[in-house]
Length: 144
Length: 423
Picture 1 (cartoon, rainbow over the protein chains, first blue to last red):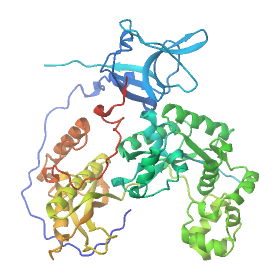
Picture 2: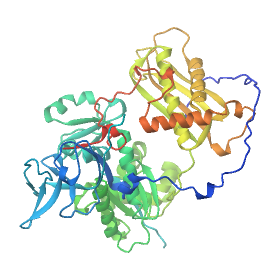
Picture 3: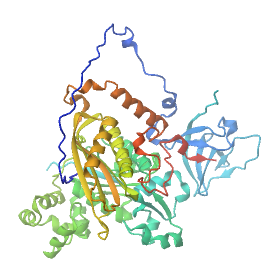
Picture 4: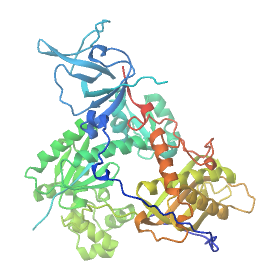
């Protein structure tokens, strides 16, 4: 608790007196009150482990075939199990990239999921690292 | 003897580690994080330490080093650090039944009941590293002071791989002679000098000091430290956070405040924040103090320091009530001699806090029956659209009094427009 020196007290005079009006409510309690349930929270459904899940914004279409588009928000679970075929965030050469984890001839690769363009596969090296596993995607559309 | 193992887990260069989670280009490069108002270095990566940047070194003294070595500089981003800290604590909770948060990057953990404590601690370290991305180190002993000591040793000696268990008396006997007495938790510089004067230089020598002599030299505080070093717990694991008795919001201004309006803008902002904090904890305050002062390190300039208090009747957490009270106090403390004062710090302190449900009711409580709804709406707007979306107009818009934070990283985890981007 902070100790602060009070050099000179301020003496407040009597507070102003005002009229008091007390609102009174009346009526029956709602018969549905016992059946109340919480609202559905799809975000909580996506984020299964809140302490290890972080949100990122996607730029570019390199996972378009996996249903992840430019501008989407993705939930990334750092504690997700790294499994071949899963969409992951990986750290390669000091930058973060979203790719599919693949395995060919005993080696691990980071592969794009976009048939329209020709992104190359990137081989995992000892210096590259999986940041987390993509747990879900959130997109919204323009209104009005 | 029935001694329970207590662990302390602390994060390595916590602020730097937090910055590195999202900005992966910061790996293996020198990074420093600055204090509030960008004054001095308060966190340094190992690379920055190796370049000779000292803890607390003022920014203006290291400018050329920053330039020469390409040191990455960040303003402190407490919003981010608090979120990361919460995630680290959540992870600890999976490894122990009780966690006591000691600071933003240190927790005491109850480690009793685990057969292989070292393996358990290593599993916990790995989990924090993997889930949150923060490296931590663990010291284990039967008292907090000894656990801190173990943690320090683990920090300095990589051979322990980040975990040191000092429950083993033999190990303690071998390691404590190597710990300088000044490194022990709770031993300040003055006590250190006194101890050295009588030939006590190490933790081992201090733990063997006769208790009576310890009490004579450094009161009951030093006696307790000696007992703690002997493994006797004198500071318990406080499982429940003590109820808040007071709360303070004070800030340094980036440019000195020379007129009442600017000071009042700062005071409005601080009182608003204090009111918000009160409502978050469902508390009301009974006393409010406004403080402001000039720069004490510039004795060549006119000096003024003011602290004025007032009672809040009824006790309140309403932003309007608090700002109004803060303004009256600021007015009362404002210098009347017309000298050109430059105020560098202002703040609002609240005391006499009670849970809202326990507050004494007065005749005047129903004067503004919609106050609670209005405050709930204010908090909801600021929660949804970001802090400071809706403020009292007296806070002003230019914010000349605001903190300097020129190099702050995005609030990656708390603002939708600040989310990290993956390409």
